[in-house]
Length: 197
Ligand SMILES: [Fe+2]
Image (cartoon, rainbow, N blue to C red):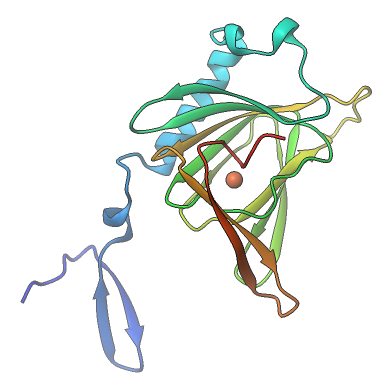
């Protein structure tokens, strides 16, 4: 019989049975770690600011104000990297990223995130310079929010996102009256944070 490596995570069932399960990292379908994705989005944000991707930006540098917008900055077998602009009133709906890890860096403005914490939605605001990573199973809704300073006129929020393996599907969820999560649909997509609309 094979013995489990000492680094394996173990779970307990009942009072005394100890059931070894494989280390979770070993099961991930990517060689990149959340820390790698955070670095990639940070680097992507720097590259956007330095003008490296100016050729991918909206014509005239005018950001859409009625719809979310995105441009793929990098695509290979390991990772997809996107620049996304966010506008008021256009949330992603509550979703996961299927079998992909994710991360983001907020480039300018702020994002509001509601994350499913197992029995309720937990809110946080991510400001420019903030980063977040999303393990597999992370269910959240993301939307534009105003930053600490009221903007007039309203300015889209910009963020750089990375997904590894590259995103292929997303599932969407509702929170039921019983305080549980119910998956409502799954869509095949390579678009970041749902269809950009
Ligand atoms: Fe997401």
